[in-house]
Length: 327
Image (tube, rainbow, N blue to C red):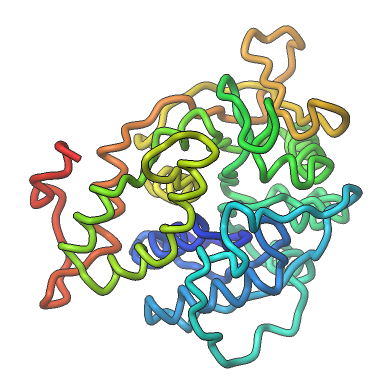
């Protein structure tokens, strides 16, 4: 098992990513850390707890992280994710105490003790604070997968920027710069690949037929998301970005791409844009792996096999999803 931290801002697609990670035996989830992004960090923690209760995984600790970006005014994405961050499903709050330690302190102390991997699904504010204080800790990051940015795809909150990096561009810029100086790479799961992962009404209905309980939970949190995507992008369904980062972390063949040196713009109309030097103009060592290709049908088979259950509690197998290629 690989020891991981999920740093996230739940968020509908973060919730789906947690569902996938928590049902993947390859992963030892040491903790979930939250950061303000789609929703404020404390609301994200509450949402993570709701998902963990649904999964029966209340053993995973949750640490609340940074409330505001490094420099920019904080602008959430509740227009996309609903006022509760889970599609206005308004599930009841789950009682219990959160970990008392701040996420930044927890991550710092953990990385001082051992090597771990990080799946970053939100703005990089927590991570920027950790690595700015102690850049030597990057050596203890076995792998960093970040859902954020874009290469050739248009943005989702500006013409050029993806929300996670746009929300706190300074944090993303700091982390990419520090990883470059450390000779390490960030695996960037950007909009070029995540836009291929569309949960359509037919795919959702199929999930509900295969596993009514989990399918209905997914239906409740994604309905608002589907309405948003229709109104904003004319998509029938919703793009679920974050679970692809988890799937790729587990199975590298889920996406393909290339290595490149990348910087993140922090100001002006290009705020949050990932500037990918794919032509090697700057002659710098790559600090990123830019993913550009994926297979949506394969992803959904992977997701469904792990998250959904039969009536007897056993897992479905990929070869049993006979209708998936038609949806």
